[in-house]
Picture (cartoon, rainbow, N blue to C red):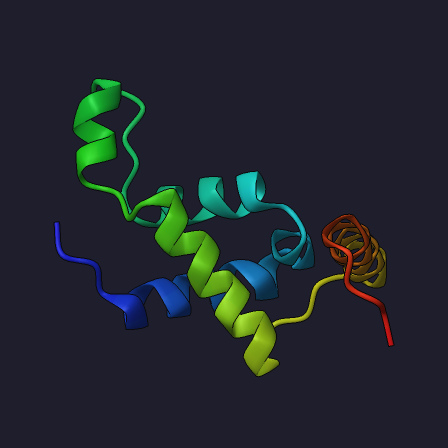
Amino acid sequence: MGVNRGDIRLKIKQAYLKNKKVADDDALLLSEIWLASGWDSEKPLLANLRNMPSPETIRRTRQKMVEEGAIRPSLTASERRYKNFKGIRKELGYELF
């Protein structure tokens, strides 16, 4: 299945408008996108997975939309991500500004 990035962006935006928590929770976002993409619980798992956009494509598209300001994560999620970023920089020996 070819990935239509515009379609994924639209589905992410629609999921975000319905539930802002999808900007913070990749598992929640993935479930919303896969349901919107036609996930059929009556079909075998492999048959569904072969017809769904990949989790990495969904996650990267969400990340890009956050960077562009199209969707906004919660303050709690932003603070948690920044704290993780600072910890990694410290582990690598980079001084923070």
